[in-house]
Structures are given as structure tokens and as C-alpha cells.
Length: 352
Ligand code: SAM
Ligand code: MD0
Ligand code: SF4
Image 1: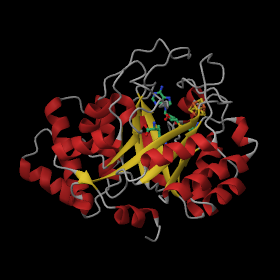
Image 2: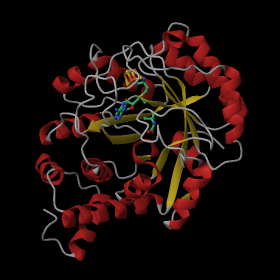
Image 3: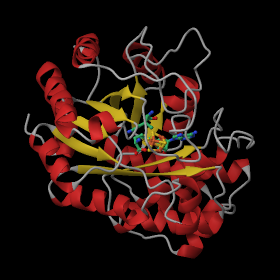
């Protein structure tokens, strides 16, 4: 499809997307199947053009706080699955407050509070609500929560106390594949939690994994599945095999599939938030993802932080290079810069 396109054709394609062109399943099939470098570069060009129309050179930055790595679930892909015999931690309010203080004055638009489905918080949600309140009072920034599936009532209370964004990734919208990934967890509960959250005013993020048994058709199912609920933020991440998990021996795929799907997401969700996660390939990986059409950098942590990520490409590295200053420096080298807080607040629906 893009193979024979001239520069002019590519510009017209981007223009079409901006004018509301919707991709058919056949279009998606062709795009997902791209494997030539030149064609991929053309896709990235269109994607960047669409992104730039809405966001210019402005990027949003999220700080990541993985505050509990305990989990009762057993997702096949995840290092923190219940049965993995690893060291875990759970931060207390004081530790969370210290992280907030380290973030004060930094270029950060939102704080992402993430945990495993830790019974300490899931069975006593008021403990989690207290954490949200603490972060709100320390930083007065929008808050994303990534707690796994929680009851509607709890989601409402969290929202009343300062949680603005719910991140809850389906991983795949192919029900058969889902069963193998989120072992023993309800597909519909996850879909419904996002739906409910959106209905009461949260912004929501959905996401999929690639390199984990997905093929062209399951990717199309996932893209369409995400589209159905009109999420405010959409992500794709490369599966990184983790020690001690059933998928430990899987050979890791290159990031090409992720970059390609990211660019396709931009064509399907032209004005939405699409992240470049530092958790997968650090700051060099961030550059590639921004060049494929992302407009958010996630998984930023204060310098010297010993907090974990979910994938942790940098588990054994000394220099983590995931702090706000390093990110902003690299953005500027690319000709990009942090967006204003008021632009972000407008997206999140917060009056500033
Ligand atoms: N426990 C909560 C949950 O599962 O919804 C919150 C954590 S959630 C933000 C962790 C996400 O990281 C997963 O939904 C998955 O998309 C991603 N992830 C986990 N392990 C991964 C791996 N090995 N490779 C790539 N992505 C992974
Ligand atoms: C990231 N490590 O953005 C984070 C995490 C959870 N909302 C996000 C997967 O890569
Ligand atoms: Fe637990 Fe989330 Fe990991 Fe699944 S992805 S095992 S729910 S931390």
C-alpha cells in the first residue's frame, strides 16, 4: 500500500487521516504485514505528520511509581506473578511522600501509581485511597492509577479523591490469546472496569503486547477491540521474557512490530495519547518510539531511584538514565520539548 507512494501521496494519506479517513480491515492487514524498512519509514512519516498536527513538538511526561510489587495473579508474561520467587517491596506513605518531594519542580505532567494486585491494598482499598490523597496533596498533579481490576465503588472513591486516569491493559482483545496471558482472569471484568471508569469521568488507557503469540489477525482484533471503547490513551509494548515465568524461554522479538503497531495506532487514534515507554529500551528506545508517532514518555523515575519497572531492561545497569532531566535533554536534542501543564490538564479535564 505505501510501497509505491510518492512524497505527495504520503502527505495526502496523512491529510486523509486528519479529515476522518478510517482504515478498513484490509488496510490494517497490509499495514500490520509491512516488513520492508523503506515502507516502514513511510508509515512513520505519516504517523509523525498526524501527531504533529495535533501536538506539534510537545511531549507529555509521566512519572512512574511502582509502589507495590506484590501480586496475587499469575499473568504468564509477568515477572511479578504470584508464584515467582523474587524479592518484593511495598512502599509506605512516608516513602511515597519522599518520592513526590524528589519530583517537585521537575518536568512531569502526571504521576502513575502502579501496583501488582496486592491484597494488602485490594482487600483494604482505603489504604490505596490514602496514598492517592498523599500524592495529590504533595504534588497537585493529575494522577494515573494502574492497580489492576478494582470494584466500581472503589474506582469511584479513588476518582473522588484525586485519581484522574485509569491504566488497565487488556494485553490482547483476542479472547483465546487472553486466556493464555492473563491466566485465570476475566476478560470482561477488565473491559468493564475501563468502561465504568470512563463513564464516571476518568480518562482511560488500554494497551496490548506484541511478540507474545500475536499474529496479524489477532493484532487486528486487538486494534478493533481497543477502538470500540474509545480510550484516551493507547499503548503497545514488546513482550520481554522474564526469569522465573512460564514464558522465560521465549525468544524476544525485535522492537519493529511494536514501532509498526504504534504508528498504526496513531493513524487510528490521531489525537490520542500514545506513549514511548522508557521501561523497554530506555532513552534510545524512547527516541525511536517518538519517531514512530508517540507523544508521551512514560516510566520516568527520579535519578538514583531504586524503584522497579515492569519490564526492567535496566535491572542490571548502573546508570538508569530514566530521570526527568535526562529525558528532557534528549527531547530537546530531537527538537521536541515538554508540553505545558495546562495543555495536559485540558486533556485530563482538570481545571488549572
Ligand atoms: N498489576 C496491574 C495490572 O496488571 O493491570 C498493574 C501493572 S500493569 C501496568 C503491568 C503491565 O506491564 C501489563 O499490563 C503488561 O502490559 C506490561 N508487562 C508486564 N510484564 C511485561 C513483560 N514481560 N513484557 C512486556 N510488558 C509487560
Ligand atoms: C510504563 N512501566 O509506562 C510503565 C507501566 C503502567 N501504567 C505503566 C507499564 O512502561
Ligand atoms: Fe500481577 Fe499485573 Fe503482573 Fe499480572 S501484570 S502478574 S496482575 S502485576
